[in-house]
Length: 332
Image (cartoon, rainbow, N blue to C red):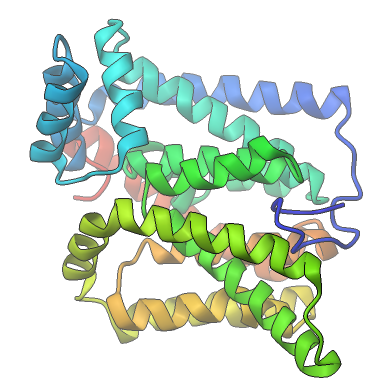
């Protein structure tokens, strides 16, 4: 079965079908996450959320064109999908806290279904959802990234279908950082293909069939997102060694947990290089996702490396909740 909808992951990792019990479990988690979000989001009135709240209120009553100009002026972004979500929700009178809470619940539902599909045990899924710093950052701070991850997960779940591939493009247009996720997969795919071509010295027609359309789609997305890319490069150019070391740790742990070398290097090493070049601590979220993907199928998440990271990130969750309640922002 194809994984990620790109004929890249096609071994036995998706060996688990989803039962009704697992769907109920995912639904239960989504209800709990939605409830927690409804309790915490009203406290988020400062930091990034100050600007997002002003944006959301300001979009009410504006035309779609006027709203987009206002959107760009408020958060300096041209990513259109998040804008459409905010514009529609604001103009139909949906409270922002309710929108974010329901979105968090839906994201947690998709996370649970996907990680069960690749073989994760219930306990690591619970810890990942409720005791993980990165998860809470996506829930309560990285708003555009949240919706991008929703589309990423939809792409992973609708494997081999047109709507899955469509979700890939939507995820990039929702938040540019998701391009790192797909480009890392593309790099690993290209490396495998290149090694295969070097061995056989033949180019299969099927290879060209998927490579050429994919290249055209990437060029189109890059053309649309170029202003945002230039701004991001200028903003993240403070990165360097520290960010790269953090992501390198995920690479080493992925190798140890999965007992593989080529796949972790193909997926995570490009992020190490990218973080050294442009920085940006949130690239660590992408690297951590690949660590989970690589480790869960072999150990179900019940291994020393996953639990060590759960404990480490758990302390961050406590600080995040305290900051939210006392200071109105995730990061003090």
